[in-house]
Amino acid sequence: MRFDVWSKNPEQGVDCIAAGVYDDGSLGAETAGLDKLTGGRITAVVSRGDFSGRSGETLLLSEPGLKQTRVLLVGLGAARGYGRKAWRRACATALTAAGRTRVKSLALALERPAAKELDDYYFGRCVAEIAGTTAYRINDLKTGRKPPAPAINRIVAGPVRVTGITQAKLGLAHGEALAKAMGLQKDLGNLPPNICNPTYLADQSKALARRYSTVKVKVLDEAAIRREKMGCFLSVTQGSAQPPRFIVLDYTGPRAPAKAPVVLVGKGITFDSGGISIKPGANMDEMKWDMMGAASVIAAIAFAAEARLPLRVVGLVATCENMPSGTATRPGDIYTSASGQTVEILNTDAEGRLILCDALHYARRFNPSAVVDIATLTGACVIALGAHHTGVMGNDEELIHELVSAGLHSDDRAWQLPLTEEYVEQLKSNFADLANIGGREGGAITAAGFLSKFTAGMPWAHMDIAGTAWLGGAQKGSSGRPMPLLSDFLVQRSQQRG
Image (cartoon, rainbow, N blue to C red; front, side, top):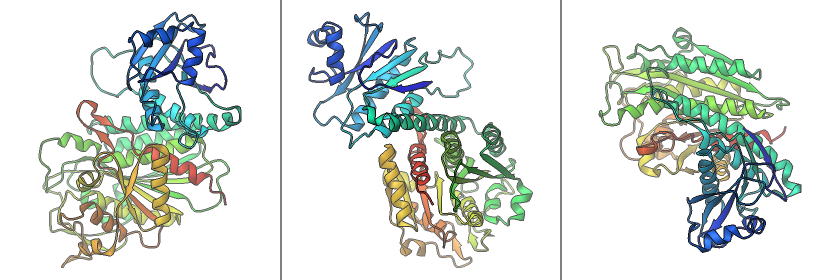
């Protein structure tokens, strides 16, 4: 896919122009200009009632009297209150509709929101991200004939002021890198667990290092994990026939400043049965997505490498299965973590925090400037925030603010939950340094409280993506979140020189 911008004229040698109409029949500024060139044809179509301008509506006009063979009318919804969210919806609608045709090139001439809502950089970035999202095709294993891929290979977006072209093109480049990373993340998540197992994630990480010279990878097998004394991690995997892997991805970008790296830590449970504390059978197939934290970390490294960010980013992925068997961990067992702290396992379905605590301890050796773990950690976070916000907690308010702000900038929102000592008190055990669960109340927060016991002295934030990492129902599949948030966070970090 090739991207470019236009400033004064959307007619950039393209097959089709997407133009906006409000639901009161009024035309966007760019559409009004096109209407004149077509001899009022757009106004006539709207006046006849053939196109209402409702959000999500499209109408393809053939032979409109322009150099272009088609004009795609796109509903913008209500003119009053039209902003970034409505623009994103219109943009996605236009690209989806055009993708169903054999149009090879498209100019977007949709009304832009005010600059304070959508500056030139985010305009370009959103266009490329949305284009990638609408073009993505799920990597299913169906044997029937697959629909043809969209024919579009060129998108020209505008209007962009001449003074904003440089920023818009940077946004396009970052958005294209983000779309590729989201595609990788979705592919990893959507594969079945008999294919996407710990060894597969390790192999994909190695492939990433072969693709980008700026990425180095190290994979620890079970023996190496044991030498690292990751007893909590190993307690989770011992019921499965699949061997665990601990993956270290190290990206160093061009002109990366000589300072401590950002470390991203991902939960990689490639299938979670719950172990001895087995889950109900209904919807257990969705537990193939319990590795979306790991997929997010691998994709974030891919984004940084593709965008050539001047930054050092280390990705740590602890990956295994959680299965019941005669060798599986039992409720009541006690294990020693890599930090030396002992943990009483009260529920084997609270396993993500057990692999993460050892991974977080491993992060110390990098003397990180920031540590962010990403995990589908608790159903309690889904109850608290639904599918709309990622939960964020941690021990560093500035870092938490960075992540929440990145979510606002990227339209991938997060919400801070409190993490105070009262929640950690719920994890007391009579037999070990702490228990792995703290009761029903505040479950998402007590899970973060458990992790906090392994992050003292490091600027750390925890992202619970259990509600946002995948979609159910007719849209069932990986959502691509929180990659927009993570990419924005890394871009902002890369601009902090010194």
